[in-house]
Length: 138
Image (cartoon, rainbow, N blue to C red; front, top):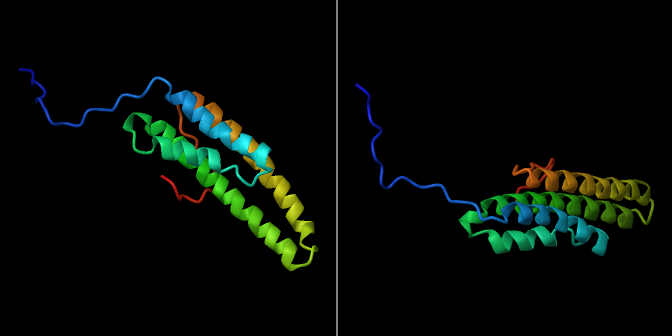
């Protein structure tokens, strides 16, 4: 005797993804690179933040929300590190530039590398988990 699965009419149904969700997720990662180039790193968090605000309450765009939140959180961490390096340079009357300039170079290189990796993984349909991120947006 085979047992029939019970019908659950009120079970939560999965939300279908929108057709362009992967493209938008890739663009949310690449918007950071555009911000990095245009503003010399100061506004690289703005693109992912805009994507997150636009798609945060739309369940069919949960993938875009997750990707843009990760990109924003990573950019925020890099931004704070760069600000700390700048403050170090100012407080030490320029002597801290010996440490600040390499820090700025490493954070810029890390942003380029990790945002490209994030865009590639978003194209595959995977959420990229950035290293060393401060989780402000979820």
